[in-house]
Length: 121
Image 1: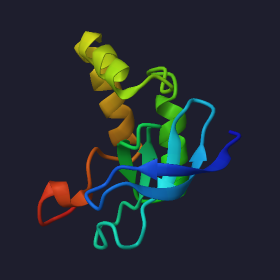
Image 2 (image 1 turned 135 degrees about the vertical axis):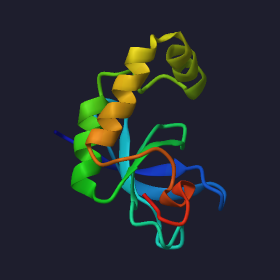
Image 3 (image 1 turned 90 degrees about the horizontal axis):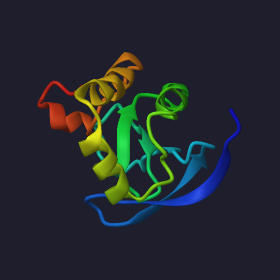
């Protein structure tokens, strides 16, 4: 898979932040969150959207890249966030279940590990 490294602005509780990300042909981005973000979170790698929001978290770059490849065809990731939300709302439950299963099977998850309580992810 060919990637291009670019400056990518992400949304966070710290406000907008620019990271170096690998931009994939699908329109997805893979990047590591900065050290000061969620310091205890072992899942430091994100699969993100050009809007700055992220789709899933993983523990390492290789897993993030594989997961991004696995979900590349699920949607046109170059669409804006509102269009993706409309697409998601219009999909059959099985399609959403497929996306979530791809994320889970790759060892990823939605949200930060801290979202899963005191035991992490």
